[in-house]
Image 1 (spheres, rainbow, N blue to C red):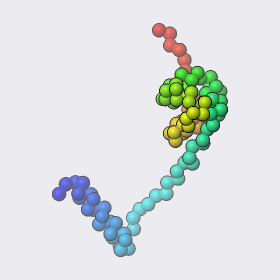
Image 2: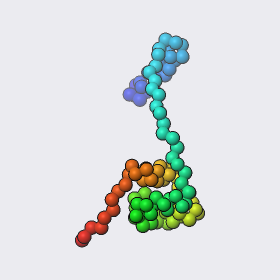
Image 3: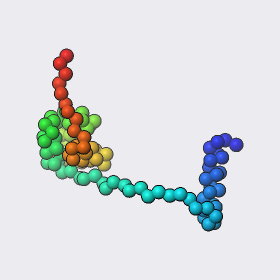
Image 4: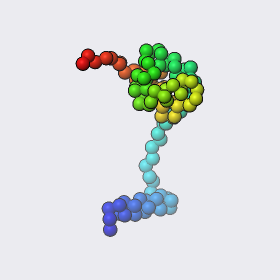
Length: 104
């Protein structure tokens, strides 16, 4: 019998015993964060300008293309859920990378 099969069988047996009232299973309550704020184009630009980022640098910070930042700021596209969360943590000052030029 494979290890995976043994674990599946044990899990199913526990589920059946729980259903029959023979076993109390542990559970945890997990508090999920609220959904990210939905930013309007002018708010995205405000975040970028407040941090003194060019569109190119802002794109690097967010790991998106410059065209994506431009389309967000012009209202052509809206940020994904993950991008909204990144914008939120930058807006709240939780993540504020310092950008500097290297002398080569």
